[in-house]
Image (cartoon, rainbow, N blue to C red; front, side, top):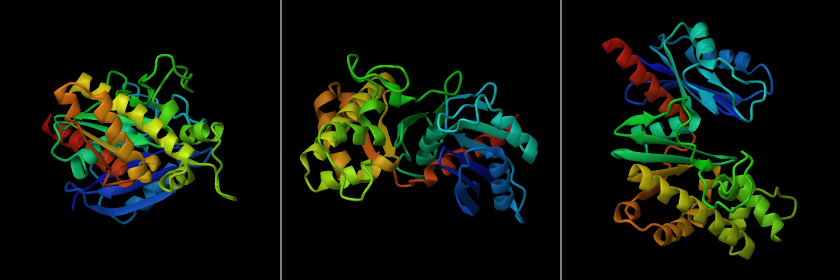
Length: 306
């Protein structure tokens, strides 16, 4: 069966898979992202996945950004050894295959639209809530990438123009309120203490919130309100009909999604904004690879038709 090679690159892990046109996976591998020599690790990973199998038709890459699609370069925030790194051309040279690149959160959205919670949506916003907050838009089945490939950076939409200064340099960004580290930071600043011997992270904060600890509950309600403001704004701007939320923080489940539903009911006004359907991911960590594969299949099909 013919396949494409899908690659998902982040600050903590590298993943690759051979994916059929129906979304089936015939081989996959994952390994930690090294601090240096990332390309050597990626080359080894690709060799492992492709060994002994049929040569794939194309390569699709989802990578943490920022990136520059025109140049095919990436500068992932959590990968300091890559700055304006020519990832697309490096992979194309290694494989000899047509290669296409997009942001990792854009691939998450495309994967959910193809095989996950976003199926059937004419206007989808995918959101990854993790160490940072990323996003991607899929309109009429086509990913909206933007002039340089950075469309969908919803984590840096301003939800409070008088709010805290964000790590990006902006002010009041949703990431400053709802990312995992910022959830924990705010809770610690307001008196929360992690369980004895446990890390002070969003996962333990979620457990305490589920048990009703007041500061933990307040932290997730604060995060949910910031996310609601961003979702309502995106829905008003692009008439988004469905939102799929993934990433580690989404694993909090009702602790996040119940206050998010209440906050959306409060901040959304217009009927088409209020009607947006918010769902958790069903693909989880597989969504990025699925989106990279769909990107490669679409690229391969368009090249064949040209």
